[in-house]
Image 1 (cartoon, rainbow, N blue to C red):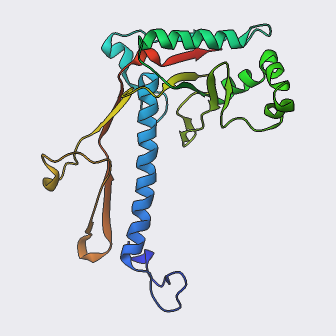
Image 2 (cartoon, rainbow, N blue to C red):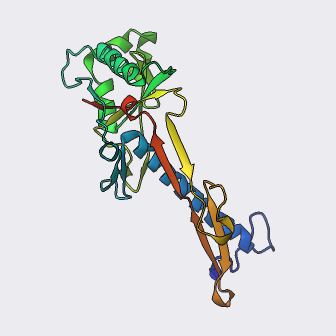
Image 3 (cartoon, one colour):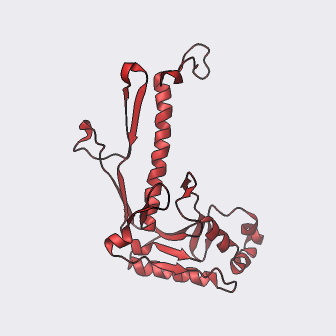
Length: 239
C-alpha cells in the first residue's frame, strides 16, 4: 500500500525515498520463501506417500491407497536396550535393495523426527559404538545434522511451518540416494492468458496497480506435483 513507502528513506541515503519497486521486491521475496516451504512440504509428502493439508494432519491424498501399493516398513526395535541396532540397519538396507530390484544407489539417508532421533542416539549399543570412535566425539558433538551408522546416514529433519512438522516427532523415513528419477516433479503453467500452452515454471509472480493508484496488487503462485516412482524403496521406520 502507499503508506509503506511514505517518508521511508532508502538504506544509506539521506534524501532518496524508497521506491515502489524496492518494496514490491521485498514482498515478492517473502512470497518466494513461502512457496519454497510449500514445495518442500509436497516433496516430503511424496516420500511419505501422503499429501497433507496445511494443518499438518488432514490427508488430501493417500498415494499408497490411490495406487494400491503397500508401504514398506521396518522396525529398529529401539525400545529394547539389547537390540543389535546395527544389524537392524543392515536389514533395512537389504529391504531397500530388494525393492530397487538391482537398480544401483549410492547410499541411504534416514530423515528422523525429533523423538525418534533422540531414541536412536540414546540407545545403549549406539552410544557404545561411538564411544570407541574418535574418542567419543559423536557423543559430545551435535550430530543432528547427520551421522553414519550401519551404512546409513541418520539426521534429524527440522522442516516445519507454523508448528506443523513435515515429519512427526515419532516418525522416520529411509530414502535411497543416487537413484535416477526416484522422485519426479512437474509444474503446470499459471492461469494467465500469456502462459496458456507454455511450459510450466516453478514460480509465477504478477503485479498491477490498485484502483485510484493506492497501491500494488501482488500475486505469486506455483502449480506443482511430485511423485515417488519407486515408493516401496522408501521405508517407514518404527521404533
